[in-house]
Amino acid sequence: QVQLVESGGGLVQAGGSLRLSCAASGSIFSIYRMGWYRQAPGKQRELVASITSGGSTNYADSVKGRFSISRDNAKRMVYLQMNSLKPEDTAVYYCNAARVGLHQDYWGQGTQVTVSS
Image 1 (tube, rainbow, N blue to C red):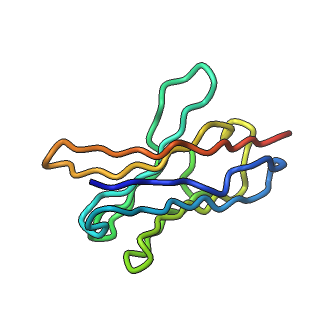
Image 2 (cartoon, rainbow, N blue to C red):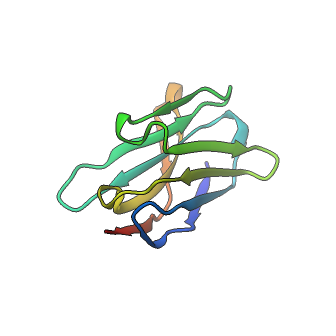
């Protein structure tokens, strides 16, 4: 299993940037697909970005060109660089680790991102 702790959230003005970090421990980090999800007020939790163990990335249409996910297996970290932030990006952001073939998902506690206009 893996334990996940997010950090880097906060309050930022529209057009600004934040870098979210997720620290993983407790398992073989490199074999997990890592992802960032978010849940905005009144909305379902949605996938923002993911990165496979092989480095393939996937992004929600709403963040393409603005957000970038990366991972550092040696440091057991995954990052979400968020640029050109919009008020609609306001949400609690969650780090996720998945072993898809084993139907296993692990979640961090979430970090709040608030974008003011």
